[in-house]
Image (tube, rainbow, N blue to C red; front, side):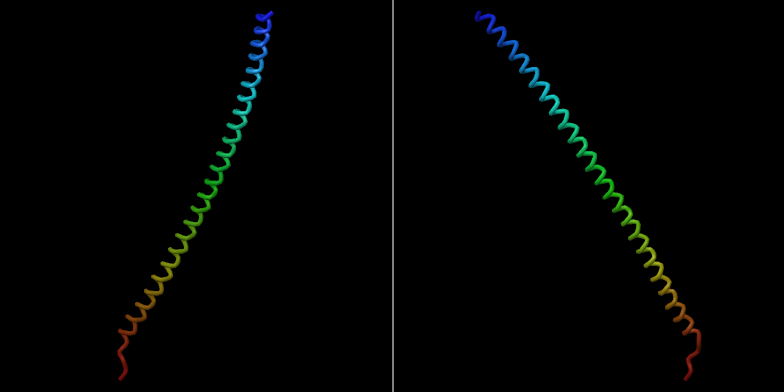
Length: 92
């Protein structure tokens, strides 16, 4: 009788253990899937931010080049006027 009860207990315990292990594996799989999704979302967010920074950097570079061209043209104009004024004899 005791042996039969022990065998029944072991069988029920093994069944419970198998159910518990299956639940743990399922929860682990769900956790891994959720973490993978969160990782992908974060990578996309980082990529989008990096792309926006690159666009801003390029725009800023173009703005600075344009500003530099304008300054160079202005300085050349001042220099040309100065040279031209020096070529004209002053009236006394």
